Length: 361
Ligand SMILES: [Zn+2]
Image 1 (spheres, rainbow, N blue to C red):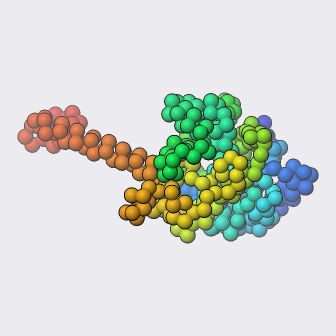
Image 2: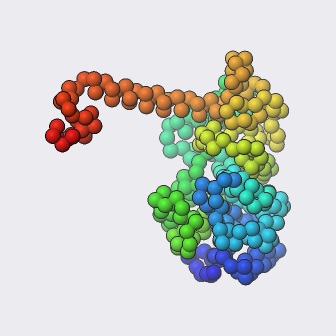
Image 3: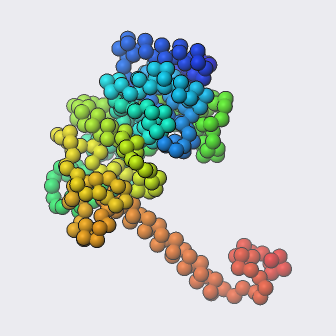
């Protein structure tokens, strides 16, 4: 257990039973003092109900607690931390809580509640401040059309311009915080994790990864503080949206782990329309993502054929088709090149294209 300053923030790494008791008492004291907003983030290998959850970071604005779940197991949560995570009145900032929530429930029976998801807050903020986050023309077009949100133009299935991208944590930090030091720490961690997917399961946890945990939670507070006053600071829609997000994967009987489940788009009917806190009645299932929507989410032809896709799934399918066509074209081009060239007798196609001399086959 260490207790020292890095990256300007105080942190505590917890990997023993006595350390755990001390950390939870300290955390409870801070909460009782009125510092109620927390930031939470889980790490692991292919984190979900199936992958390993090895680290959970819980932070107040002054101090970061990093719990070694791999070492402490269920005790991490029975210590009192589980109750904090399940307490709806104890607000927790998270960034894309879907996999964390799925892992916490299915592996540790901790039913996460009281989440304010900063990824969703960013979408709400972007709708109101389209110029704040536009880095290319596609986004500009998307954002300007989003301004028409709420104007009921035609059948819901045709309103494809309402589909929105969700941004990753790194992109949000770059767009909204412009803090070189944070970005550097995140990038370094990302590079290390790309090289070694098992890194979150290795001990001792390296300083780079500890800094990564600290930065993740601290940046969440800063992103939240930057965007929380959007729409006059109303929080109700974000709470409703986060409640839906928290249960999106967790509530599924079976996970598909495919592109329809996890992609770069905001699932439909997660954030209520401005001025509302609920969603239209859902009575028809999307055959790709298995989520329920109003009948008019789907075209009449799709419904007739019994292969209805929601607008997000339709877009995913379109992108998959584009990619498939591209690969087919590459294969055709490669075959055409093969047909065109005259490969010397006895030489393999591989040797020819790799530039070997015939005798090197
Ligand atoms: Zn769908």
